[in-house]
Image (cartoon, rainbow, N blue to C red; front, side, top):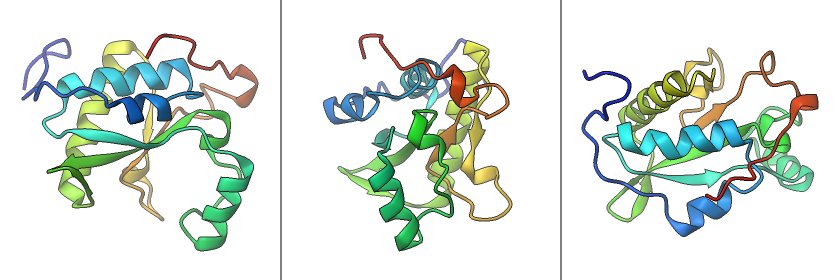
Length: 148
């Protein structure tokens, strides 16, 4: 394994225009980590969802896709990433472990804490990454104003 500043098995991946659009409204620290993680990741990924509306959260809650109405997605402090293999999203768990490792490396490099839904004891959520409540309370919300 290389140092934090050297990509591990870099695939030369880039965020698609759609992924960049889906990062709109995501906290600048988290958006920066997502962009940097592609350099570390041996697996290409797409941004499935960033900031959510209350209505979208309610629909996901009613369908059982989430167990909370107080999601970090509502304030732009969470993002869902999908493994992008052969032009489609794949759900194989080992792919998400690789993406999580790349996200953790990018977060460490940026000196930012992140939480991975795959580490949760119940309702494990492999695609989900968020900034911790303790480090990023909603009152500190700062949206990504950078050019994506």
